[in-house]
Length: 150
Image 1 (cartoon, rainbow, N blue to C red):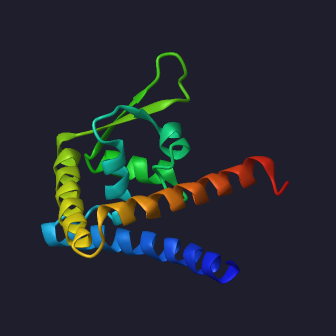
Image 2: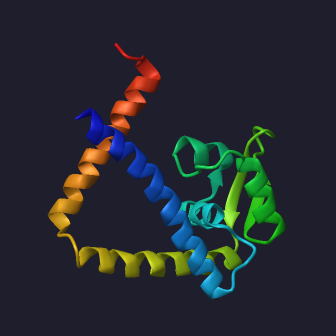
């Protein structure tokens, strides 16, 4: 199992990078040159919600190292609006602009096309099994972070 586990962890990392490459390629195809894959995925994860920046990280929506840089850049480029909380001036809520919603819609269309192509190779029950296994791995890692190796 150790070799399989090792391959799985490396595959997860490669798949994430490849997914960002797919998004970046689609953005280029659409002529969107001012966003990268991480930023477009972040916009897609925000969706129709008004969300505090800290929630992006806590929910696992943001995978980069500098969320404040990307939020500021996307705000400056007109993809996000920001609003400081009335009760806690340290908390900032972000929301998509119409410009961002157009990009998110294109990312959703891309995901639909890729899901259809993927489903031609594997049936839904097997996909659910893989998802359950990955969710269990996520839980194992979260338990390790919180409780150590007990």
